[in-house]
Length: 593
Image 1 (spheres, one colour):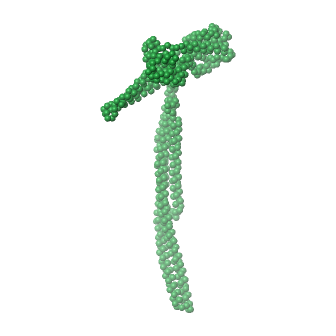
Image 2 (cartoon, helix red, strand yellow):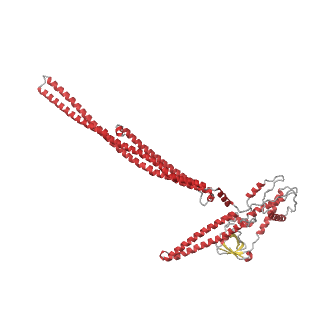
Image 3 (tube, helix red, strand yellow):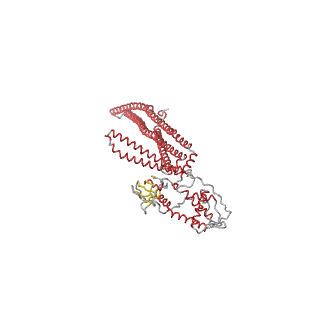
């Protein structure tokens, strides 16, 4: 099966068909190029999607990703990032192995096709030229034959006419002979041209054109094979990344299998456990017996004494009082359900019941939080302190590594003085040593706080100010409410006036306590400022490095020490900024902080 023998007369159709084949190849190239653009766009969108849902560094969101389900989600995002990379690989391989190769091949194919059809047109023009020569020789032979016939007829006519001279007859005879000779020559030329044309025509249709058409057929078949190979490559490029994509999917499945609900539940406990014990049982209060009014409703001093007696009694019996009952706006109003009172109490914020604590609280709100994390519940405080100790240990290790490196460099300088001056590293060693010593002091301070917290965690009862006075703030309103509940009318109902009266009594008592606390405090020791501190917040005082001041209140666990410069200047400074020396009479022994 050959185009040269079967399609010898379809030159124009073959030209159209081969052009169509090139168009198909270019269309396929365009298809692959658009596919690579889609892969790149898809990979970019996947990467952006993975980046969008990645937790931000050094943010609260990053801390929340400690749960196994969140870690699995992070693994999924990372695997999707790798998954996007495989689509980029698909795009790169298709571009290099298909698009670029086919584009180069199309250019070569166009040049080859142009050359073949140029040869075909040249052979066609040659056979057409031979045909024209044959036609010209044939017309000339035909014309000469007709001229010879006319000359012969004229000679015969002249020869038969008796009136014509013999010279005219001879002239006509010679002319007839000349025309016959010319006809014979034209016949010979026509015969030679015809033989030549037949030979050329045979060569054209059986040799030249079949050879050219065979080359065109081979070219077209190579194009078909090439596009088939490209399609196979197209599939292979996808198949090559399937194992890696499968690993990505396996990674997502493995991450999902690593989710541990029990572990997440334990992490929730570690994150939010306060360390407090649940409240004890509430004693039954018998309202069937009329309560006797033993305290004057208008006496602030008696109210104060009653409140203290009530607090002492209830603290022994219950440990904590819960303000379940609100003031009633009318005698007929019913009490709200117990669960509502409990929820309201649990969501209420602790009150600051001391003016000094109020000033300290305001200063801490305006500035930074307590250094010892005393504003946190015991368990959370323990975790924060442990985390701080671990961070300081890491910092010490870094400083020690830096010191070892400087020491080694100094030894090298000593052995090879041309490399550097060993003395130039002394100030760096001193600086690193100071940094290590400061960090060690910080670790001792935080470890002391940590030991204190760990020793207090299992103990139930009244908490010190190191735990932010949370228990005391919660206990105070419960005593007040219970005192109000007991202050009833003779018929057992509660009135608004009585509630307001009880509030007034307790407020007066609080103010008495605060004015007692605000009396000038005695000096309990001295301190030396280690660093300069700018006291910009309310309740603080500025100090200069090396300054000697008086201590009037030691650190209560919140990281602040109250000092006095003179009778009019006193305030709080960070405990870590001063070296405190307490008097023996105040603490029983000389104490350094």
